[in-house]
Structures are given as structure tokens and as C-alpha cells.
Length: 104
Image (cartoon, rainbow, N blue to C red; front, top):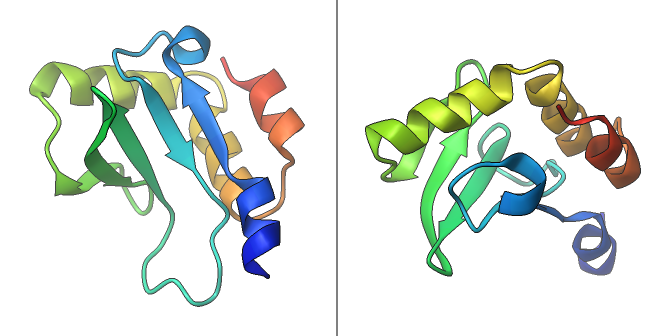
């Protein structure tokens, strides 16, 4: 995937969309050159506060989330198909529109 294509496929989930206490959750498609599985970046106060792996389990890989923030993130991911939608988006199996219109 070219860099320009990757930029157009990145997505941000904002607090108004998720109800979470974060500025945004940054998602991007997984590319073959990434040495790790699917991860999301959590922003608060305009900065990345944590990088969270989604498989095989949801866990903080870098940075820190408070116990409360981690609880709310995991609760959000467990609602409906949220986790699966984000994973499918990251694997290029769902469009940004699919993702944004089907999150619970």
C-alpha cells in the first residue's frame, strides 16, 4: 500500500462518537511491513497516551491508561461488534463508512 493510500484510509474515532474520555482513538490499516498485529492509538490532551494491541487480547503495549480509562475502552470494544469492526477495518475488510456507521 502506498503512503498516500494509507493516509486516506486512516480513521479517527472522536469522543463525541464513542462517548469515551479520550480526544480520539486513531486507527489505520495493517500493512505487511508492520512488525506487530493490530493496534490503536489513544489520544488525550492532544497527545498519544497509549498504544493498545487488540489481538489476541486487548492490552496496553506502550504508554499508560488509568484503570478507569482502560475499563471504559474495554467496555466500548465489547459492545456489539465494535472490536470486530475495528479489526476488520484494520485488515482492509471494512470501509471507513462501514466502521463509522456500525459502531455501537
